[in-house]
Length: 319
Image 1 (cartoon, rainbow, N blue to C red):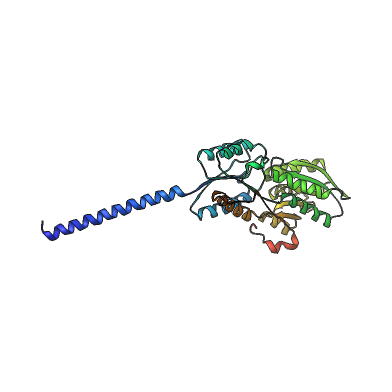
Image 2 (image 1 turned 90 degrees about the vertical axis):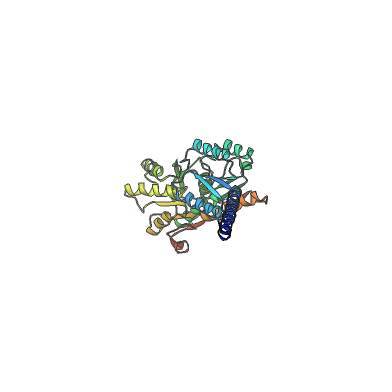
């Protein structure tokens, strides 16, 4: 082999070796980068409510912008399934868990397990009973939401016979209905006739409303814990030929709720701000991981949306 050819082969070997070393370094750095990524879990009472999709998307956007991972689970209103989901997240050694509890009391043991594993719990939208187990709770002012609906009713009607659609397993639902009831106390001409639990679901709210109307045909107001329940109530009213004849109130500020207000079938909805809830939740978990102090409880004010101010909020999207 000539000297020139020998040098070509030597140079080729050096290039291959340098490439292999560079590739090995890149692989090690990639692995180290992957090891530094945080992994989080999220479980919401049900993902058939677009409200939770908005919260989850906001959290995911914030986490993935930092190169981190979010694993989202849907217990479909089954508290036992949600407990299993939290336990699985603990086994996966996630760095934090975002939870919207199916049942604000029964979820306690799962939160205790996460607490013992030193995994921070960020509660969103609806409180848990054992608040000391949550590193941070971020919810709307749900009592205020119910009270805002009550005050609007008082300002626009001389009286009314009222039906309530509730969700007793969710603290958010309890607070909204309690806020409504307390704001209605002592108001002459108004009477709460009855209430029914619909778990905040359209498909349960519709038959619940039908049963209530059969028992209380004199009812002329329906206060619903959320907009999905209000949709179910209005579906029942439409079937009964009462669409637009009974005052319906909801909570959420959903696009569907605002569209029903524009159409004249719904009086008002106390708007929540799910995008803000999601952003606050993501910010809280990073503060905790960084060892920074974080507020134990963050309550976000609701705003009543009526026909008079629809233009301020828009109909097509969430706040």
